[in-house]
Length: 185
Image (cartoon, rainbow, N blue to C red):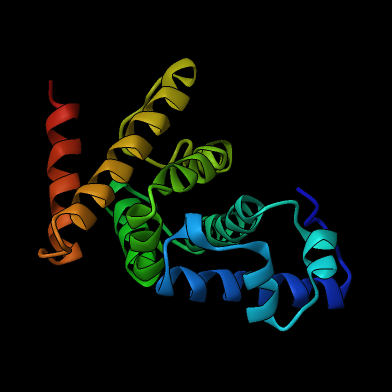
C-alpha cells in the first residue's frame, strides 16, 4: 500500500489508474486484468503504477477508502442522526456506487467492500454515539455497529444478487422494521 501522498501529480496518476481498472472491470473479469493493461488504459507507464500501488488489490482498497470516506462525510453532514437516516444514507450511497459494487460482487470481491467499511466502524461510532433515542452500553456499542454494518452489507449483497428488483426505499423500510423488531425483543 503505497498510495499515501500529497503530490498532485501522483494523486492524478492514482485517479487515472482507478478509472482504468474500473473501466477494465466492465470489459472483463478482474482476475484476467493485468497491471500492463491498467497502465495502458490509464496512459501511464507501469513504473508509475508501481510508484503508486503494489497490486490491483491496492487500487481497489484505495478506491474503497475514498468511497468509505465519502460515506463518513455524508453521515457527518446529517443532522439528528437516527437509524433510518443512517440506513438511508448508506443505501443512497450504495445506489450512487452501484455499478462498482455490482462489479465487485460479480468478480467475487465484495469482501473488499465489507473490510473497507468495517475499518471505518470507529469513525462511525464517533459520529453516532449518543445520537440515538435508545442507549447501548459503551462496551456493546461497537458490537452494535458491527451487527448493523453486517446487516446492511448483507442487505446490499442480497439486493445485488436478486437483480436490484426492489427500490432502495424498500431496503430502508426493511432495515428500519428489522431494527425496530430487534429493539423490542
